[in-house]
Amino acid sequence: MTTWKDFTDEAPRVSGVFRRRHAATGNLCLMGTLRSDGHPRISPIEPRMFEGQLVIGGMPGTTKLRDLGRDPRFTLHTATVDPHVAEGDAKLWGTVHHEPDEAVHARFADWLFADIGFDLRGQKFDHFYLADIGGASSVEIGDGGLEITIWKPGEPERVVRKG
Image (cartoon, rainbow, N blue to C red; front, side, top):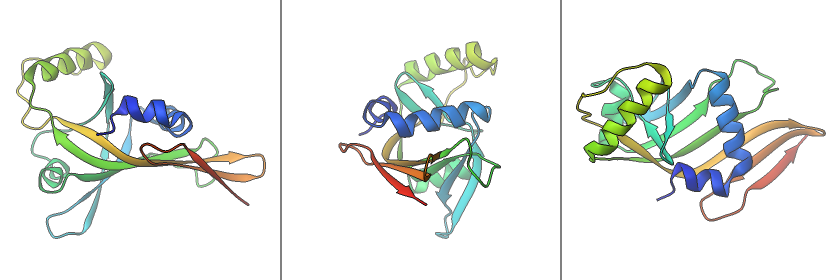
């Protein structure tokens, strides 16, 4: 399994773009999942980095969480409104798994309340999804055009220059 910490250690350039864009949009990303009929679904989400893991959460009973319960594959894309990607953008993909440890849930709820004031303390998490990151890429504007950085677990980042 490739955790968020593994990803940031192995892919500092891509994870740096992801973190920068994630923070710039108030933690907003777009997440792709697969609907029960096999068609793609895209939903807004605010993933969180906690204890070296990427937590994929949301309101209980949402379709995006039901999608992940059926098929754990996902993709995340940093939100952007700039067609020129002057600030860069990043995406990552992989699968999720449910973390059943209620002590982890409690620590996350305490941390989230301290971080943003959203109070989930004392609530039971039906689904507490952690990401297993299967790959990632970023796009940045460089001196000579686009710089696309690609990463796969266990491999160094690779930069492709276009234009």
